[in-house]
Image 1 (cartoon, rainbow, N blue to C red):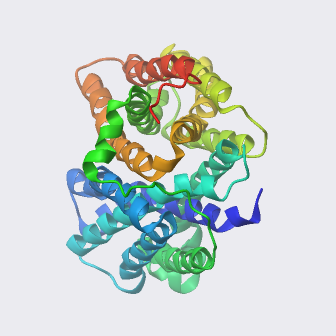
Image 2: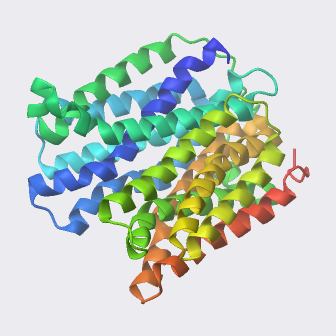
Length: 383
């Protein structure tokens, strides 16, 4: 691992702060006496920021440089977490801060994924991106657990749900300084892109199929995180065990899978195929409705889901590295699948379909990814 990747890895770690908003929404709901819908606006605002600012963020990175956009993202995040760190904001202001956090995290994703290529040795991009996504997974888990861990730390404990935000703020500032000190030789486009030229990349089948793949992958991952707990509860586990053996274990194995991929030499095309197949098998095991087999499926699914993003992202960027910022913007925009695909699965559950059968939705997503993985390795992009 190149030492130049360390500040970038820290930035990926801090991307996980946005993922803590979902778990925090329950505590915020209690403090502000909110309805479920109003509390759900917190994670929703994060996804909306991705949908709105990913493509503009990619264009900005192509014009002013990925490092500057990375610094902009860290700066916006520092401002966003500073408000609840130093005051108790009204809910409207808190939502504004969360939206700003979503914008900042969007810029981190848009710039961070392609800039990892610029600081990676030849042939190490996929491996380093998998490791970076592993760090993001650690950041997501740590950020979600931190509010509970600090419960016994004096002043921070007295702040309640806000207690983690001073720590988030300090880490954002440290990451900003470390990234600012880096010297990076960035891959740049010869002609500054526009929105039309960026969107025109979708006319190339390789890129359009990859964006759809990211959309479906993120949607499938959110489906797993949302519906595994009630599904296991319906299969006879207690609420506590359903949470522990469901989403918690799933995301633990997602993180393990990414960290393992980050320290071994992998062929991204082969690993993409294996990941898609393993993910599909895992979802199929959950659909079986057999408790023991479902638990095996969660482990297999976590390992399969782990490296879809880094492999598909790196394979796509390597097709046209000079357009890495625009491609990153398009693929990060597809993160909005995390807001839309689960709605379809939820609709199936509300219509009376068994929880296990509703996993047809993530299964269909992974059928697409498996077919896409079998096409990977064929040069179809235009230069």
